Length: 125
Image (cartoon, rainbow, N blue to C red; front, top):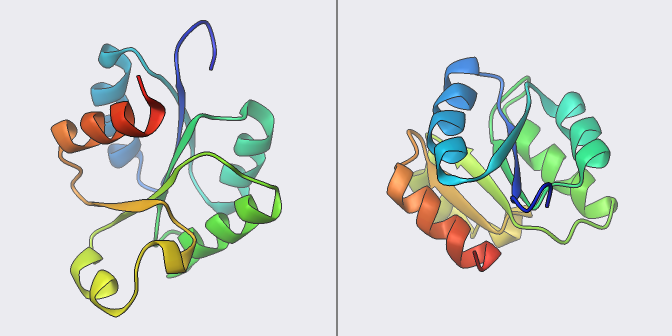
């Protein structure tokens, strides 16, 4: 938390996605920090200690999101980490997000109401 606001880290290689998340989150009282890839995402996580992490499943590599989730776990992460993916249906049929190291998953494009409701529930805001 920073200045009484929850900090959300958005890790996605698409600037449009990061921008759209920022446009939903900031007007609703959240601080948004961004990273555009796997390495910068992990660095930013260590730098800011966010309250919630959104990470794209496919960035530099098809499984970059999995690598981020694994690295955050190695660092002792205790905050919710949600996967952003456009291929959720096929993925979730085969295994749960928790099996992959995520708290949950959001289908791209992310529904703003679903995102805000999930944040309020997970962060007890």
